[in-house]
Amino acid sequence: MQKLLFIISLFSIISAFAQRPSDNFRKNPLLQYANISLMVKDLSTGKIIDSYNAHNAVIPASTMKVVTTASALELLGPDFRFKTTIEMDGEITHNGTLNGNIYIKGGGDPTLGSDKIGNIDFIQKWVEAVRTAGIKKINGKIIACESIYEKQVINPRWTWEDMGNYYAPGIHSISYLDNTLKVFFNSGKIDSTPEILRTEPVIDGLKFSNYVKSTDTKSDNAYFYGAPYSYERSVFGEIPANRTEFVVKSDLPHPAVVLLTDFRTALQNAGIISTENTAVEYSEISNKHIIYAHLSPTLAEIIKEINVSSNNHFAEYVFKQLSVSDKKQGSNDGSKAKIEQLWSTKNLSVAELFQYDGSGLSPTNGVSANFLVSVLEFMKKNSKNGEAFYSSLPVSGTNGTLKNFLENTTLQSKVHAKSGTIARIKSYTGYIELKNRTLAFAVLVNNANGSSKEVTAKIEKFLLEVSQTKF
Image 1 (cartoon, rainbow, N blue to C red):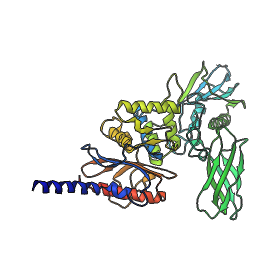
Image 2: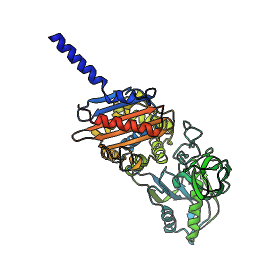
Image 3: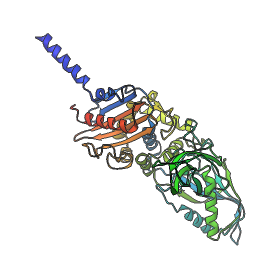
Image 4: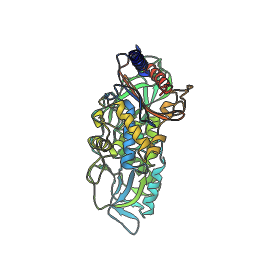
């Protein structure tokens, strides 16, 4: 009898294990040869509900932003603000002439002139500060000081096909207009080469090699290629035919130069005479006097834009800021070390984290489902910044990159998570809010035999099944 009970019990355990949602998920023909790491954990009990290769690091795409934003909250705090200062040197004469220079000292603020968040009319405040200082004429230069970050503005781990596009701009000490250039095309009949009409902003000396074709495509499939600081760009791909003004976005080759031009124009329009001389400096200049300090929105506001909209530009600025100190410039390597050190002190397995940028754009990034779930658990249960982090995540079927995810299902509005998508990569990580408990999950899929849309549907099905699992 005891032997029979043992066999029945063993059979029940084996059957229960075989029917885990992850088994159905990974054995699907779409996913059976994919590289998968997943974990689902009940945060109220600490019990792991389901997992598969949970400690294996795979490419996360934009779910890496979860690590970036959580780390930033812990290291900088939700009330942190980037600071850009307007400074001067020299002397102001009795008639209001500054015999010296005006400086824009970059502080890495990604929101200057952004159409996402922040004050779009900030330059007028700078002009008013110059006027308030008693300056009517500038007998010197207007200089942009770019010393807070390393001069290597493009992450060397990014791919060539991304560099030059708006979603992978250079991370300069001074950001402006989201580091984005709008290029307007007039596309003619199918198979013709569209004409480049103009750019916004206008950049003197900028040249394009145009290899774009007008086709029957319904969307923007054009891509820019170009090196940092270079004023030569090549553009390939296709755009819809027969459009009189079709916009494709590139990166700004050197944002500080554009900001200097706009600042000088605003000063002159306000009656403050300045010379045509502008310059960019890459080292700190002493003996300056601050006449105005411009502060960005709070970090809590910035990371909400990062996670809801999956904003690469903002994510990279936050990432690089993590390694800024009085003695060191912000750098990719420095920020990588800071993040590893942070989570090591929290007893997380940093051996499962390979982070080389802030946005997740690099295909050399790697992270495990276990590490992501551990970060989520720490932020939910142990961090004083947990609410700021949680509220930064988009909500299923509601907003941001999750607007259509799990829409019209039992999990609509119950999942707060970050998605990630690059070629052959689809991933999600976040929280599932059930009636009496919260689940933390991470599902990362590399190299599935299907489209991104098809993989998303399988991930949705998995999350619906695991949320209904009795445990």
